[in-house]
Image (cartoon, rainbow, N blue to C red; front, side):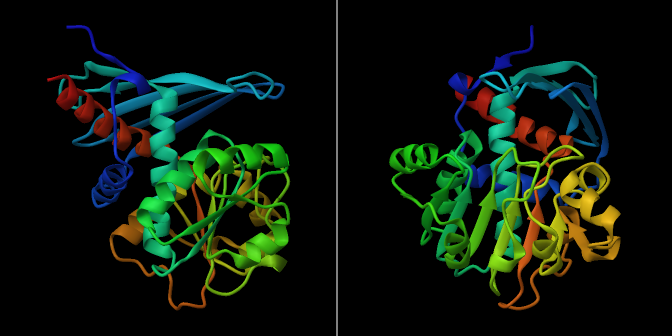
Length: 301
């Protein structure tokens, strides 16, 4: 039988179920991971592969063309762990949407203060819209504000999501308990001088060596964690640039989701500023791909 091609139109998921699956996945052994980036000017072909014993293997390849709409397109192959057969081809946007947001939610579930009341979303794209919906499931009392460098986009997202658009970023940062940043920025948009004690920072957008969303001061004021050391520290500008300059050291990166899920100390006090770098590695694609395939099979039965 031919493997199914799974798209957003033929499967439905729940944010909290995906977060739970990621948490369970991080209790298992660490994966074998490999990333490949090919460049043509500003255009990127990104391929990420992972193999986790018991879950199988996956390869997701996407093109990132900043001048096009949609700017990101691709697909993921999911392979059976025992036979090596292709079990499914899954639309990359479906995998990425659920993986990216659930990754950040798991980081916030572990690191943010549980009594958080205000969320600031910086960015107004598809990921930002998912963040608004998902964070308010995990933290039901959150009041949400949205900021974007193009105010009309922030207003449009706020209208669709029933939240508030803001135009003064420094003041919005100071009000927030959780700040999630999902942009395509190459220069920092979040500055450490705006932060206050007790906040949780969730950095999503940077995925190449020349991209970052938070400045040196933000990192220096924070307890820094990543989703996977193997896919972030030597690959993404958010960490590579301040490590190279000496603004932070390798010892300042205190662990990843495997460490945190297995009992490592995250937040040590209500006054800590915690920072989570969401790198979105292929192991997460694989974990989420399994959730998607299971849901597809159950809903198609």
